[in-house]
Length: 282
Ligand code: G4P
Image (tube, rainbow, N blue to C red; front, side):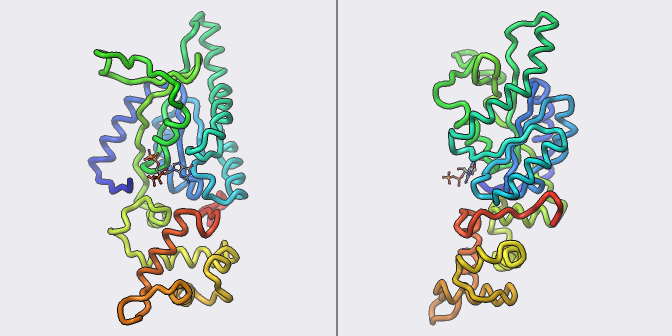
């Protein structure tokens, strides 16, 4: 689920993406609503130029609703179609369908004028690992949708899922490589749990999270852990260790356990709906 990238991965992913994108009219890009910029790779703008573009702010159920709205405006302002989403739920799919229809309308109109009839619009899903691509395809396409070309002997080549009479979706998502070069991007990807915890210092990560929560979501932090005052991140970690009874053998405080607990509770939304970056910068 979590990922580690090497230069070879990126070259391969990029080449695959460049090939697949030639086949589609619309690029549906999933980003994580908690870190809409850090969970993107801006190279997709170059690879996907001349295509209709839809951004799905996925996992919006875990993100701050006010910030979801800010990010929607931000992406729309840049000329993308945008929809906020919980890919696990069928509820949001109507809105996606409506936007796809709208995005494709122009193209269908063009085709019609050229005398091309009944040519479905083709779309593909892209995004960095763990952003919810497979979940989205499963929920969106549903069980009822038959794959086109899914017959014996037709296994080679691309598989298209027919969504309705106008739209077909490539059944395998395109994998974008994250932009690790920027340290703050790496940090935020780690905070949402997209980088293996084994290669990170959990204590430092938890302290970074606490620092951010003290600044941007102090009330949620206090409420979740029964804190009365927020002096500094180290004191807060100590207090959470105590309040949650995180102890090693011999009744020594176990800060690592408390750090892991805080990170887990953030990632699963237990602390609250928290966004880590805003369009205005941090
Ligand atoms: P990928 O194809 O882009 O790599 O991502 P995938 O669909 O595998 O989703 C990664 C994880 O994110 C999954 O959790 C999935 O359930 C969860 N997820 C996807 N969309 C949403 C969403 O909108 N909201 C929330 N809260 N979670 C979402 P997992 O831990 O791998 O499995 P599980 O917890 O579902 O068992």
